Amino acid sequence: MPALAPAVARSPVPTPTPSDDAVTPTIPPALSDADQLAAADFWEASTLDPSRAAGLRARVAAWDGGPSGVHPLVGSGPVVPLRPVRDRVQRLLAERRSGRTFAGPALAHRQVERLLAAVGPTPDGRRTVPEAGGIDAVHAYAVLARVDGPLAGTVVRYDHRRHAVQVVAAAPGPDALRDAFRVEDETLPQAVVVLVVDVDAVARKYGARGTRFALQQVGHAAQNLSLRLAADGLTGYVLGAALDHDVLDLLGVAHTGVRYGGAVACGR
Image (cartoon, rainbow, N blue to C red; front, side, top):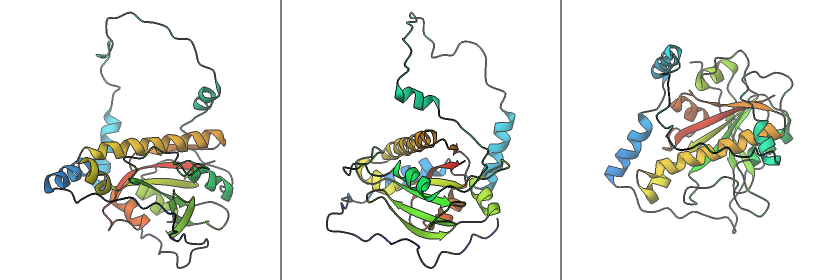
């Protein structure tokens, strides 16, 4: 895999600094050895590296659609038709598309701001993504490969409490981006929003089962991003086969113990 680009030496935007009114989550006691092992097993079993990614590709290629016949979840009770729903929310849901072809100009800086706001705070300070225990289990980063404005060509960490970003690295080149996120389509997205999970933080409160709650939060964030893409007439899809450790290296957080939760390719 080609080497990733070096870190950016100077941020083009002000780096957020703590303030007196910043909310600092309380960290519960350390995990027991048993919980640590259980949480690690949960993630390591599905971690992708180049070898496992090749096996996944072969498995998908061999898939024949599954068994035919009546699905086991279909019961024998009566079927009750429901009235159709045609309100604003349903129309927005209907506009969602899983698009893998990206073309046209770079994303505008304002579009990047709107995308990140989908996982950020509301005007009154609440978060738009339900949090697992209110302990900031899921964090968003963005690989801004082709965007306009001060963040062009950077990797940023998004502060969802203050709706601000911090530049952490230069965006990788096309080949490195393809390798890390296993993009096999002809075109590359203009931006990729990456969701990482602080497994230890959530497991300290809930034990090993807490990792399930964190993944629910990843799903909420991906849904928000999908709805924002639809509302803004953009395209995108959820990336399913990224290389966990390579992506964490790209974000500069491989040493922290966080886990790769998922990513959404975003663009025109």
